[in-house]
Picture 1 (cartoon, rainbow, N blue to C red):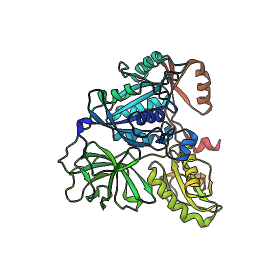
Picture 2 (picture 1 turned 90 degrees about the horizontal axis):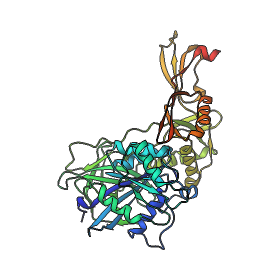
Picture 3 (picture 1 turned 30 degrees about the vertical axis):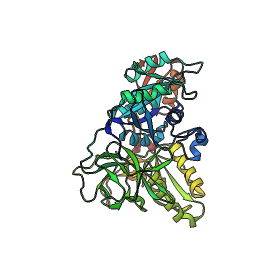
Picture 4 (picture 1 turned 135 degrees about the vertical axis):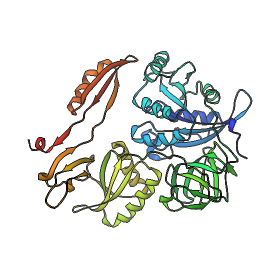
Length: 465
């Protein structure tokens, strides 16, 4: 039996690093009886060893909770815990696409920080209802009123209904649950329409094959149903439908507005593209979902096996990790010194470090990593044998004949930095040392807002000088 639409709430928890997202998720699970006291552990949704060791969230995780509210009704809460680091922003965007609202967790001592803003703007783009949660109010340095004023000034959302909590001690968790039910709207959907579901995430399980996390928009997903991936064009038979509570629970069906998982004996990684639309093979929906924006890697490096015989093992391992993390790219590369390997693209240096560590731990690979680099765009002059053209330089080994280079463009960013006044001078110096140009300075919510950027290129003449 699928849940009634009016009693479903789908929400993400978003925040800056270390503001208490995963701890809040732990308390919500505990309060609603998702796990017993014996089964609870810190960061219960962070199920990778590397997440627990570093105290960070890398993969978004979903859990379904049943909550009996003060109005006497039982609500189904689909919670999505998300990472805080900018390197895993793609995980956040996918989670937000499956929700109608978000809990914005802000540290009562630290206030609004960089990723608070980045994640809340993503949430606003998805037209979410945002419920501010002021966490760590039990700290001696907590200033909840100042932080509420800062949220209104910097972000521009009302804090009249902000919830005061301490996820560590459990203070105010009941108020958070009531706020979810009261303020976050139920999903929309039509049970009688053809099946339309969003492929939110997928990962490889050695026993079940590919497990697919789905958000059903219209129609119903049931065991034994033949489904079609609209972008991939492949058909599969569903052999398991279930939800995470956070333990796996197999159920009969998923209806409109519900988030759960399916398995369909899929063994090919390429058949489950994140953002694809799942529909009924016999009675397909007319219009596919828009999907997710293609991720743009910003840091590139080469990964080579220490033992050349491990190349095929590395190819298979990277393929499986790519299924689990759609935000990194790879292509085959060869080096005279290192042999065959892969040129990989990442969202940042932490992302690179995590992927490298996961390949070493989970797939028992010894790897050589080349120095990280960015992509340069080179304008080439016309020659006797070749027309003028533009090329992208990924590898220094591919650097063209200098006499043919008209111009080299390197990537720049436009940055907005929020900082307390006492650090302003040091931050401006740091930006200038990195060839940054200050384009604006204003004050927002008691903090300096610095805008930096540049748009310069290395011309052939400048390079010769």
